[in-house]
Image 1 (cartoon, rainbow, N blue to C red):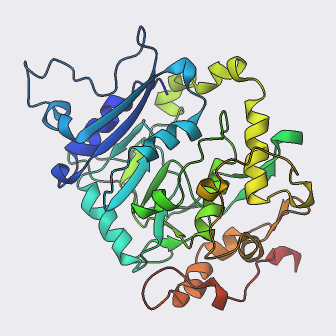
Image 2 (image 1 turned 30 degrees about the horizontal axis):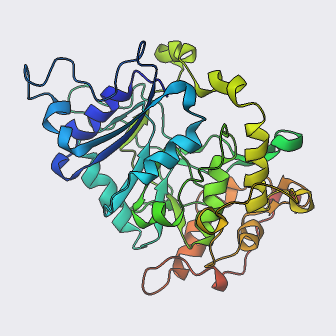
Length: 361
């Protein structure tokens, strides 16, 4: 959304890939034409310098441009991006302000393959870019792994929701040679087979929603049989509004449109909670329920299984504490043996487990 880093992000995707000719990029460019640069516009015209990255790979970049004032948050923008999918074998989702390491494409594919799980989705919150990429060879300078294991209920009234919190950092991966199985999903980085975004597309009926988006995708994905993993190695890093990039806090954000769409967030949160059942008996009895066959739950696993295994209590709107103590290593070791022989996901029907806070035992 009105992000001046978008151009460099797209350039990084192609310039640092081992096989850039195999990549196709879809950009949802939300902008104010009179003020913002176009994401895919090269520094100089392509006729003047056709060797620029954005010129060489222009045929592999699709762009949907929209006036910023019409855009209603990241969920709808990512819904548009999902609709730009054209059957590619793999699909990746990133923000418009990241940088990639050298040969990132072959690395992330190798990591995905190492799970031996057709239903694996590699997803995490990315580490900040500061001191993360070697400026000469563009290799990663990090060895840590970000694990998603903290969620919390937040908000009040019609905006009550379950939200993913910042990751727990493993300075040295606890599981070597494979991504680490963990229970949650992040919008900031997601890599999977393309069928994930076909089966679990972004819900277009959630305008102005920001918090709660990720828990919704995680629950829906779980019910369709998908399993989430933290990558063993980072292939990209995020430009957060901290340290030397603190000025990004002054950038435009979609909330500047809030007065144009009053009441939308409350209705979106009611729909999200209605679909996921995250508020137990407090789940709205009436909500906008159009196209639940497309944006609802799957039938491979139940949401109740998800809540039971990972210590989520919708009725009391609470979660078991210290889930990270289980996710950091034990979850992977206990659950991956139940990967189906055909590699089509972990069979949770064979897992008899319910997480409880070990400090409360």
